[in-house]
Image (cartoon, rainbow, N blue to C red; front, side, top):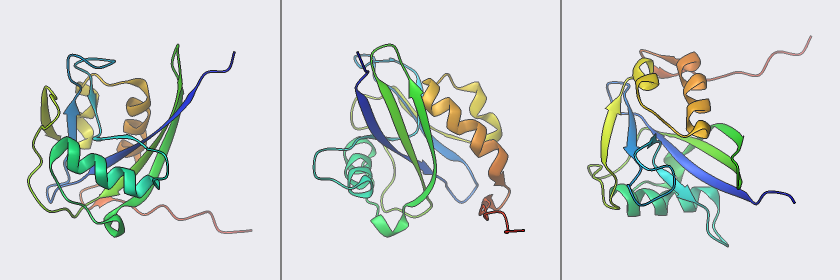
Length: 149
């Protein structure tokens, strides 16, 4: 029987120092105490950007304009009972100070080079490799498509 596919949106919130925000999953949710990029499920009728704006407000109390969300990467990961498609959006501008609003164990601003020190669900972990390969002291580098021969 095919596994249900769950599409999740996540924010790679980057501060002025180049750190990325992680949130620790609540004790009463699946994969408790693991660290993840803030975000959540897309609800019926929502675009990915609308869902991420809603989730960031609900989870960590910040306001983000959809125009400040830039598609960056994605991950596709099979778990025992479902399959996740995780859409990662870069965000460098928001209003408010992030705070744990939904029972998260905490929030942490982490340099990309230190993300390996935080236990994460595999879908989030797969994005870490991308971040480490595309992050510089100026933030995420723009990836250009290969020029045609």
